[in-house]
Amino acid sequence: MPVITNIEDLRKIYERRTPRMFYDYAESGSWTEQTFRENTSDFAQIRLKQRVAVDMSGRTTKSQMIGQDVAMPVALAPVGLTGMQSADGEIKAARAAEKFGVPYTLSTMSICSIEDVAAHTKTPFWFQVYTLKDDDFMRRLFERAHEAKCSAIVITVDLQVLGQRHKDLKNGLSAPPKLTAKSIANMMTKIPWGLEMLGTKRRFFGNIVGHAKGVSDPSSLSTWTAEAFDPALNWDRIAQFKEWWGGKVIVKGIMEPEDARRAADVGADAIVVSNHGGRQLDGAVSSIRMLPSIVEAVGKDVEIHLDSGIRSGQDVLKALALGAKATYIGRAYTYGLGAMGEAGVTKALEVIHKELDVTMALCGETDVKNLGAQNLYVPQGFGDPSVPL
Ligand SMILES: Cc1cc2nc3c(=O)[nH]c(=O)nc-3n(C[C@H](O)[C@H](O)[C@H](O)COP(=O)(O)O)c2cc1C
Image 1: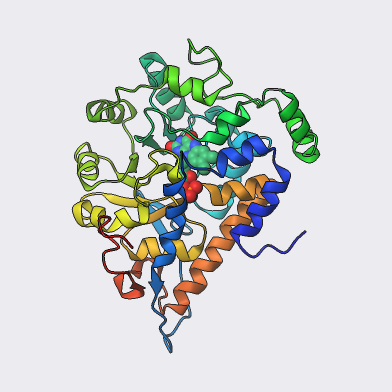
Image 2: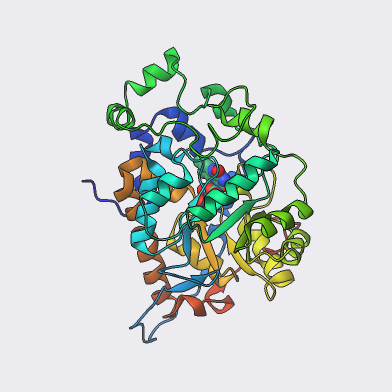
């Protein structure tokens, strides 16, 4: 087993092990990928304040997300097609999260179904909802999430239409992969991945194939989004979903203070400041730069979470110190999963936990809940995206 010291190590193994189509699907942003790149580079603009001769014993990273105890404030973000990165990938990721003590969010566009993941885990997970036009399907989806004992829904509001990722079109992304000369040639070089995949029945969009109707190519993510997703989603509809669900609701994909206010007004329990990991609006500002103004606008009224660009425990610390109550990782755990299955997701969580814990200590803090502006040097104008960095 190679020595893995950071998330980048996992990414390199993942790249070698996984078919190109699925690696590219994760490791890309929309159009020019400007937002995808800035999500990570903007974290690097923030510096940490070193403090010394502070008692660093008895440290804790424990916190809460929507009232739920977490070992650290880092949840696994919803990631579509996870079960194509590694066979039964959603079950593996959910198990790793459960053992570690952090929330797992299952995507609508998962390969393993809600029922599959519930049958293989004990701790309630969160279910991410994309809104399809078909009302019967949506009501049934909420019922299924209730029956599976999901403890919250995460409504993603930034994907009524799909941002274009050039590589997905060129690779002909689908689940299961379509067998073309190019995809076969590439998969021949990924034998362990292929053998595991042959050993599972879970190779389709488990939550929707067989449940939702009227889609011309059920294996294609872009066809589902173009034909079945609801482009008319609005705040009334989000309020209606909250009523149908009747439990905790997290609204994901907020980038502007006005939208944060609307989400708080419809009664969201938390919002996720997110630009979908740079996969939707290319040219949008990084989510870490939008955090301060959103905290200022609604920080007292709603719990604020953040994702997009987190690759280390240091990044988590910066988001918390800028006012987020918690964070999510998408690619960081997907790399781990593709590199070495459940053990790789655990490794990604361990890496981030250790980085968070030790960095917190070197900043002179002992409790993750006490991180704040006192720990950071933030460039002037960072929280004002009209000022170039
Ligand atoms: C491969 C991939 C698939 C994703 N699928 C979904 C999805 O199905 N639903 C959703 O709400 N967000 C989805 N996202 C966005 C993530 O939930 C999250 O916002 C993003 O990954 C955070 O950025 P990071 O990857 O830099 O951590 C996806 C992201 C990636 C990388």
